[in-house]
Image (cartoon, rainbow, N blue to C red; front, side, top):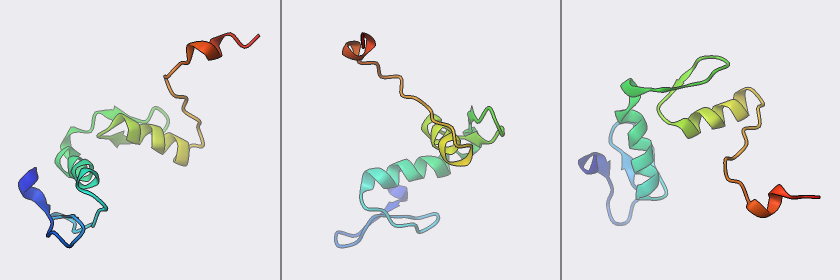
Length: 83
């Protein structure tokens, strides 16, 4: 994947496939995963059945397209007892 990342020292990194520019290399790497995993979409919206390559994309899709609030799995032990 590294060979697919174009950047010159003074320029923003950009995708060699679609030429989209990114703020940093980590954002570009995540973007490249989408290109490389297009045929491996394993995560599906249970409402419209659209397929995604990442679980967090399904969560964002549900929030924006279906107006659903998807709760985080992080639980704070101090918040359990609110009485």
